Amino acid sequence: MGRVGVVTFPGSLDDGDAARAVRLAGGEPVRLWHGDADLRGVDAVVLPGGFSYGDYLRCGAIARFAPVMEPLVDAARGGLPVLGICNGFQVLCEAHLLPGALVRNDHRTFVCTDQRLRVENAATAWTHEYASGEEVVVPLKNGEGGYLADEATLDRLEGEGLVALRYVVPEGGRNPNGSARDIAGVTNAAGNVVGLMPHPEHAVEAGYGPDPRSGTAGTDGLRVFSSVLRQLVS
Amino acid sequence: MGRVVVEVMPKPEILDPQGKAVAGALPRLGFGRFTGVRQGKRFELEVDGEVTAEVLEDAARAAEVLLSNPVIEDVVRVAPVEADAATTTLAGGSA
Image (tube, rainbow over all chains, first blue to last red; front, side):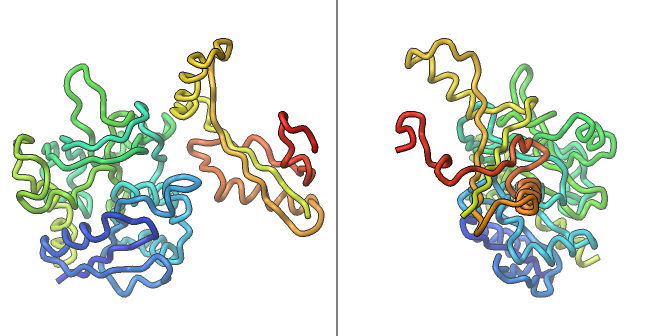
């Protein structure tokens, strides 16, 4: 059984849900503490959502220098699967494990909704149990979820297939937070590091995830976690 | 005690929703002449002793590594400030 670490920073909110998602996907969650420079021999790591360090300075900017991040950055560069969800995505960008940055939603209000997404890259450690182009619905909840990078970086992401997930935007509509090119999640070139704004860990058990009116069973997020566990086995 | 001020602004091409919110509020209060607002951050770094060239270099490095995110922000000022000047306000003068 794969052991998946879930880091708790001061101000993390969704570490419990991330650990639960790992368990429901058949893995063993291992709680990691921000202040310990120790990954406890885990096979993969999730940086959960929340408001680490109160979002002071910039979202993820202080968490990025927490002791646990030292071994994590090294391990991620060495191929360890790492998933950053929401605040975790912000931490990965601040740590330069992923390009770009997340800024305040362009409409200046917090967004909380069942969000339809398209899986653009189904070859990463965290998405390979999806079909390329498949549409899924998972909750999205953020105040600073606008993904930005300069045009050259965005072109490179598109050209190299590093856009992992995109918001599905209705004809004539806008994406939920002003993200460049409707980008909801990105991956590194090796495919082991993925960051995404939406919350797959909140869509892993029927009745506790997206509303049935979303047209899904509410469990579309589960395969994010089973993807990495399956990869660990093979 | 010496003090260094570091100022960070969102890059010009980056949307600044906070500045926009402030810009929207100003006309409602009668400040109609201000056509745009951009909101940045000011840090005051304290050191024991004087602000030397080495201190300023260190502050500039801290500004790049932690105080700003070069993807979305520019460091626009790294400079020594007088201890008194830092707490002086326009309204209160240098009482």
